[in-house]
Length: 108
Image (cartoon, rainbow, N blue to C red; front, side):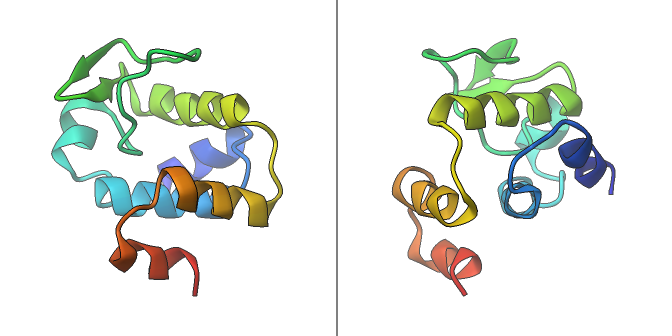
């Protein structure tokens, strides 16, 4: 529930979609990346946009806190432009969601 509150408090666009990303990418915050490096969304190392990452491990971003990970999700959203819900999902499909088994979760 804490992550849902952070997502809402920090002005994340399409919070229900982003919460699903959190669920799938981090196993509700229980993955190695989430527990050891506060990376809740499977964000790769950033080289071309503003970020809250403080380092990288195995090609993925490292954050000082879970809050910083959520803030970075918003920074990523800002970097890809303001999109309505449908366009956001289509964009995720083109750049983020590659596994067909994963796709059905988003496009029911």
